Length: 401
Image 1 (cartoon, rainbow, N blue to C red):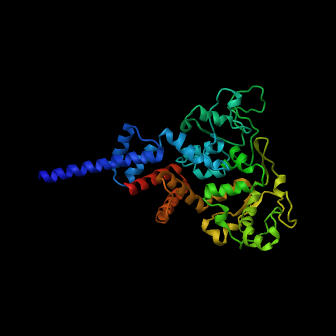
Image 2: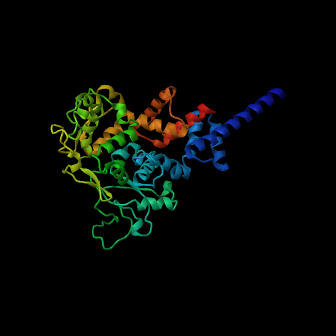
Image 3: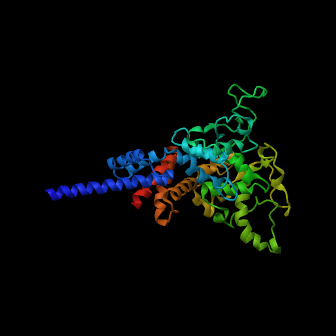
C-alpha cells in the first residue's frame, strides 16, 4: 500500500513539474519574457485543472495579457512588414500601431482582425503635449515619441478613422474642427493599413505602385509574385512600361516577364489614385497618378484610366489560394476585402503565428494543424488573432514537452 501511495505521489510531482515547465515555456513563447511567480502559479493551476489543450489555451490567454507581448513581441514582429528592407530597425509607425491595435481588439466580435485590410481605421496614441508630437499625416513624430517614451501600446492605442484626420490637441484657430475635436480633412478611400503613411512611404513612393501590390501579397498572403508565376495568364493588362522584346527577344517576355506582370498589373489599378509625395500619402479620386502610365516602352500596352482591377490569378494554378467573393472591383478598399476573404489570408496568418510562437517555420507534418487553425480563425467570421496565438502556442508547447 505504501509503495502504491509513493508512486501516486511521485506521479503527481512529475505532472506538477511538467505543468509548471509548460506554463513557463508557454509564457516565454508568447510574451517573450518569463512569467512572474504569481502568473506562473496561475498558469500552472490552469494546466493542472484542465490537462491537455483546454488548460494550455486558458494559460496562454494569461500570457497574452502581458504588456511585453504588445510593446516588444508584436512590435518587433510587425516592423519588417512596414518597410521595403524588411527590417525591424525602424521606428514605431502607423502601420505597426494599427496592426497591434487590431490584434488587441480582435476578440471583440464586432472587430475581426480581417478588417485591418479594408476598414476606414487607424490606431493612434494620446496627445503628447505639443503640436510636433501629435498624430500627423505628414510625419511619424507621434509614433516615434510613443516608442521613445515607452508608452504602453496595450493600453494607449485607440481606434480612429483615417477619413477624419485625427488631431488630439485643442487648437481654437482651426475652424475645421467638429465637436469631437477631429479635423475633418483626412483621407477618403481609406483601407486600413494599406493606406497608412508608413505603407505609403515604403511602397507608394516613386516606382509605379507595383510594390504595394507585391508587399501586400507577401505580408498577408505569404506569397511573393515569383510564387504565383504563371505564363498562361492573358497579358491584356500588362502596362506600357514593360518591354515586349527585352534584349531583343520576345520569347523572354512570353516565357518569363508575363508570368508575373500579367497578374500583378491587372491588380495594380486598385492604387491608380494614390501617390506618396511631400511626406504624405495622397488620394486623387478620379485622377490617375502620372507614374501609372509613364515610360511608354510599348505603345500598345495597357493604359490605366481608372481604379478598376481584376484578379487574373483567381483561376488556373493560383486558384488554390482560395479566392472567395468578387475578384474584380475598384479601389484599395475592395482590393483589401478580396485579400481578407481569401483562404490564403487565413493560412498565412496561421503560418506567421506558428513561426513566431513555435520558433520554427511549419513543415509538411504541420500543415494539417495550419489548416485547422485557418478554419478556427475564420469560424463565425471572427478572425480572432488572440485566439490564434493562444491555440497555436498551446499546440506547440504540448508537442514539445
